[in-house]
Length: 77
Image (cartoon, rainbow, N blue to C red; front, side, top):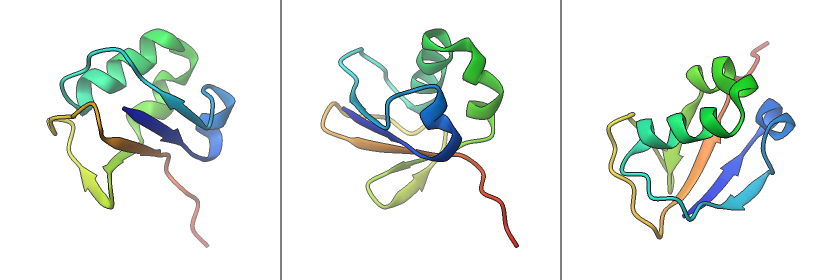
């Protein structure tokens, strides 16, 4: 699956990368990302995950062909 990260997450991960690891759902993806870069753990806890054009929950089942966008909280104003 393809992972796309935005904003501050680019300090911890490439902006786009292919994940070949088996992860079943969004929660497992989040855990895998924390293992890869523990310094990003607190930021990842506040991120939203989107598959296609839809924001999904942590229990959302992921497929190998999915494109997952990880969206950190933004600042308003």
